[in-house]
Image: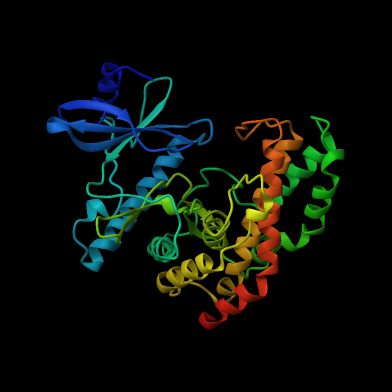
Length: 363
């Protein structure tokens, strides 16, 4: 952790003239280091983040994406006649050189306004799920007219199933940690589903499924609410990039509609919460229906299975490689995660007909 003087030096490289009284850790993000900056009177005014440039290797692209997205949303909000827009879209402060980040030679830093009188939630309820669905659907809707090619992929192939399966097959063939034999049953389950789980890439090549701007990290704690529980804005914009709409509903189903933990040791705890799924779908369709095609709507429940299968593949790939990507807390952690994700996938498959029927009313 840097000293206050070092943080003050970093903050002086941005276009702000406030008297800084404190800089302290804030939130529980896993990727970037986040700090709350208080000014005279102890009032929180800024969020300072150190960008993890090992994950987001093209910081210029990352911050340009975020600038384009936030400016576009702000314009849409103003066209709607919205007020208090600084609480309804993130506001980033340029550095002295005009860029939306500053590099001190070691790290990359960015600064945005703190959103006052706001809060986020960790636990998922049907009501929060509905509100999150509305928020992410509205987020996508506002960005739906950004021209193709305007944003870059901040993590290339992030939700590309064919790419993830290629990584899995490479790990299985190389078997660097000597673990392939012990997971033969799981690798078999992954293999028999391969063709069915590459539908979106096939449809895209056939010209039937277009790429759109997605958030790609649709967790309930990435939505900010006001004191009355109303949605203010979507945050954590690092993974906003082109992809398929299945990603955003799929990732919420995977994370928010799971009755167990992502790495649950007791697989009996793990299943899909249909009330959470239905609430999110209702909220999402309220705000996203205007730009979705009938094919996209019909595939939304499949998105939950796809993203859960994808994460199963990624955890097992890392286990085969000797745990080189995800942080683990014990030697079998990635295998435990794999089994828990696969159990959720089986539950989603068992409820596939019910989920598909639920979406038919919007087609």
